[in-house]
Image (cartoon, rainbow over the protein chains, first blue to last red):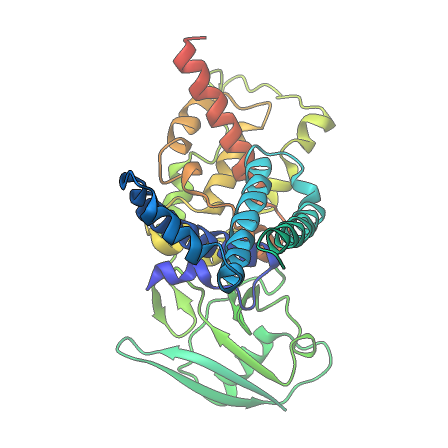
Length: 124
Length: 236
């Protein structure tokens, strides 16, 4: 199936890995967006009980791991996307190795910081 | 002895076959293929011509990566060499793939100087400064081996995608100060299966045996195309 070539990164460079990550995180974020919209439909219940009950389940220590992974998807998709936009306009192409290294570094730093904040917020 | 494991195709089925090849220092993968053809199995089919990395005929997948067989020394690969035809091309036989479509795409971008003042009766010199030459020189190094096209994720999903080599050729002539055919090429490059189809995986530049940077050319062509589109909207 040709579309599986999008996720082929063995014997390929770090750029293909970044490309595959961009696609995978994009699909995960789309899936999350659908869930998020379903979640928000609970607001149609004017009493707010449905929303509060869902919040009680999702904003918890048990859900923290999923939230942390979701943030990793969002941060990597966003920062890697910015890297792609910069190159797509023909800028800093010669420094692409440095740029991709810096982008991955930013992903790790932003992800760790966001994870720490979320951990503190759920009372860790 | 080195094992050559080759993915073969006889027109009906694909199968793997292994050959033991005696090697010597400095021997290339292409020489190994010639040894097999001349001494073990004359039906083995592969494409080769110049044997010195100029014609681009012998590009195959060597241990998973597209490379020129004539420029790859066996010692640099290891004791087991896995050879496959290039991806994203139709396999005709063994390691030989169909290149007609690839060359047709190259031809479609008008890869030649376009000028209205050409006169064969009174030819005139087209002067160019070294800095003008540097604007496009690296993109002239393409040998049309197809390595870039074989790793392009856009070409993997759509056969009619223009591909990196053709788009690099388009930019090479657009960036040439002697050329006057930019508008014609931009209209070809601005189609959805050309520059806007590129996903910027940048693998084409990584596998290019001549380090010709097709991914850079595509992005520069994309910028040119975008500027051209904005200008046409503003009627500037």
